[in-house]
Amino acid sequence: MFLLPKGKPLVENFPIAKLQLPEALDKLKNGKLTGCAIFDFPASDCALIYEEGKLISVLMRRNKIEERDADALRALVDQIILTDSGSFNVYGFTKEVNQAVLALLRGVKVLDRQELKMIDFKNLRERIKNERMTATLKISTDQSVGMILYRDGETVGFFDDTADAIESSPARVQQIATLPGATVDLMAIRGSDGLNQDLSLQVNIRSLWAAAKGDVFAASEPANIFQPQAAAATVQPPPVTANSTEVESAIIAIANASLGKLGKTLVDKELLNAGGIKALKDESKLRDFLNAVEKSSILLASANKIKEMRNAISLEVEKL
Image 1 (spheres, rainbow, N blue to C red):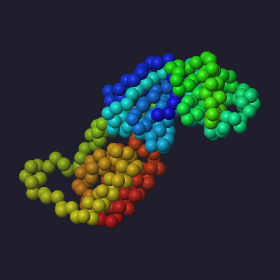
Image 2: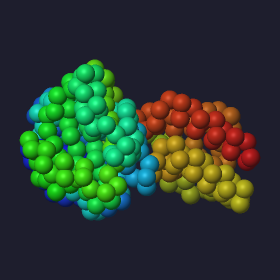
Image 3: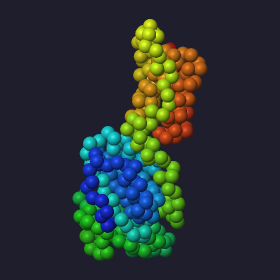
Image 4: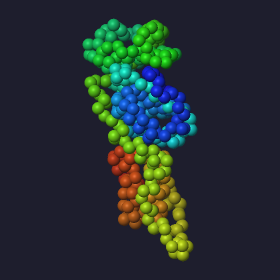
């Protein structure tokens, strides 16, 4: 897990398995949270930064890969659905500290793992002050991490990996700075970077959550499913060849790569509506299938990713 400063505890160690994400995020928004919500999973972590109830930044880290903002929110929904362990924590910050924490998550790296002994620390502090940086200075060793938080060039707090809250004393951070092998990272934001967006208006979490739970696809009616019993008994599905099975598997793999774990659910449903994989040899059926898949994918992927998915699926269908 990555280390973030702790502020005023509002929620601590709430089991993620019991969490209803849309309701939880609505409470943070309606409560005008200024602070962060942290999801600690066994193999990943996700941090949401709020400014007066606006969701201004999201960062998901898993398998050494970072996802941000809308992509991170989609990954968070998948992760909650797939996991049965982990904890949910919420901490409130002052506005000044909150913006320094935002710099830690999404700021430009002014310094990247520079050896502390090679840095003129006095000059660095003067630079931060003169340039009115909103930033976090992180000092790290193999065993310890300390942070100095800045807002407009002024120090607004200190934090380290043994602290339970933002501190006003630099003593522990100064101690870490004297340890052998200490390195420095400096992450800074300029002006109102990221402060004006509200990701909760850009991503419909409630719809994503419903989709992950399997509810969103109930809206469209399957075509030709409800036939009279006698007629249904006389209609036998065409035998599935190895080739069509391979094409269907390839289409599902494409959807999963583009949409996450919901890809298979979506493709299975729309193939059923179309009348099976072989029905896609009909140009109009293929067009209807692709349009239906695209309509259900709008909340799950970007327009470019959906376009790429459509093209890839069309190429696979040509193999039938």
